[in-house]
Image (cartoon, rainbow, N blue to C red; front, side, top):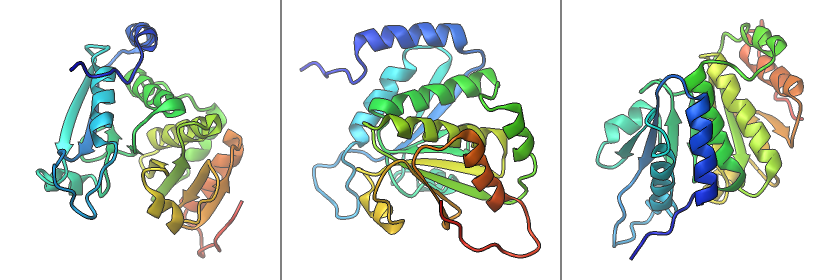
Length: 236
C-alpha cells in the first residue's frame, strides 16, 4: 500500500526551488523519536512520531544539502540526554550536542515554514533580525530559555516561533523551544497556557499573543542580562 505524502506535490516543487536558490552550506536536522511498538507502554505514547519522521524525510529529500539523522531516545539515550531531549518527537537544529533550536511535535500547517526558515537561516548564515535587535542581544550574558507554545492552525504562532528561533541563532546563551500543545498538553497545563501563541521565558516571564520584534526582545533582554539583584516575575 502506497504511503500518502504529508507534503503535497505542489508544495514540494516550491520548496525544492526555494532550497536550490537559498541554501548555501549543508544543514543537518536531528529527529529524536521512538520506534513504533505494538504494545502501548504508559508514559511512552507518541501519537505523531511516525508521521514526523515521514515529513522530515520528505523535506530533506528535496535538497542534497539537507541531511536527517534519526535518533531513538530509548535505543540511544546518551544522545538524547546530551541534548537534553526528554520528550518526542523533537527536532534539533545546529551543532550536535549544542543545539539551541528545538521543535517539539510535528511541524504541520503554519509550523512547517518555521522549520524551512530555520534551514535557510542556518545554511546562509544571515540573520533575519534587525540591526537594533542584534545589537541588544549582544548584551545577553546569562542563560535564557524561551518556550513558545503553538498550534498548527494559528498563523500568529508561526511569527513568534520564527522570531524565538532567530534569537537563539543570534546568541549562544539563548535556547528556544517551540512546543505544539496538542501533543504536549501536560506541559501546556504546567505553564497555564490557555491561548496561543504563548511564550514563557526562564519559567517566569510570560508574553501573550503576537508581539513586535522590539517588544519580544525587550522581555528577553530583561531575563538575560546580569543584574545587581534578581527581578520579580514579569507578566505581559
